[in-house]
Length: 365
Image (cartoon, rainbow, N blue to C red; front, side, top):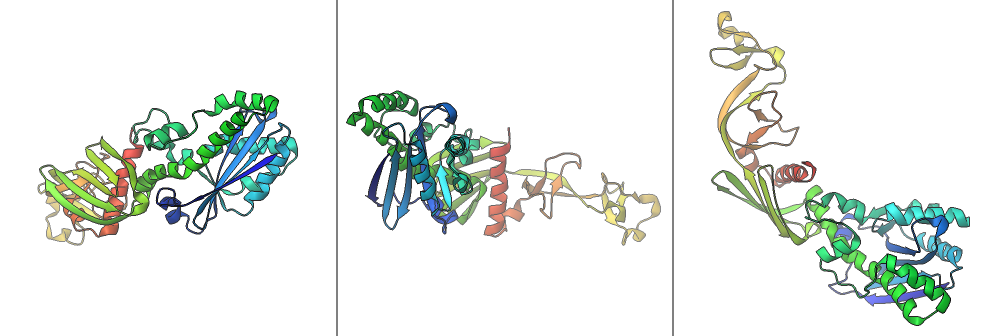
């Protein structure tokens, strides 16, 4: 087995991503990637494991290279031991391939890999895969995401091509093949922190944090301009129109256009048994004041008639716990809230509303 070490000084282009600084400030993160001659541990060779970590103001890389074709056990044991000083493993589709492969290879070689598998796993692919439509991407392999983020690579091989390169290297032991094998893995490792910028999209949609905001009412929309915190910094622009909402966002600035409805809607009381319905007036009143109304002009309210009506300006409501929800009819799914309730909300209220809208962008078909 050959062990290769690299150290690169950090600058503004390769610092640890702010995503990890914010969401995992006290964690020891280890980025890793493996290279094999196939998918099944039983019938293939594990020939390279590479790891990357941040130490002081440096990026550190270590590669364990099975340079003789016989060092799988030594390679895997060294990796398992090294991982013990870390709390999280960061990888791309490691849950789908790398970790199951390591587990199966460890069982074959009688090496306990449980300490590696018990670490907290941050699988970039698993986190980002549900954003395929949002990012307008056809495929979400690592190379596709790197192209989306305009991350440049030095090597020109993909993993499948390197299988034959490794097999020839074991026979010939030439320096160029070794260089290409190590370079591909090293580029994967160096690209992974840069690739982690893609995680700002889930942070934006699921954990939005707003620094400031402003409203502008325009015809039948309410324009909400937001400045977000750095952990929600979007590296590439997204522009989405869905369900009447429009989102345009890049960097730490986002515009959300919210549809406005001017209508007469109904507010339904929950405890209908304590209300009477007035057919002539077409609204319900509480039984505490019903004595002032002739019994011939009132009937016991039902779930469908226990409401009051209000003509106002409304916006869609997605918060199930919102205190004032209006509807055109009780049995309809669409709910509305007063436009003024959002305009007068504090920054926490704005965040709750926007997060609810953004969830619809992800989950709606």
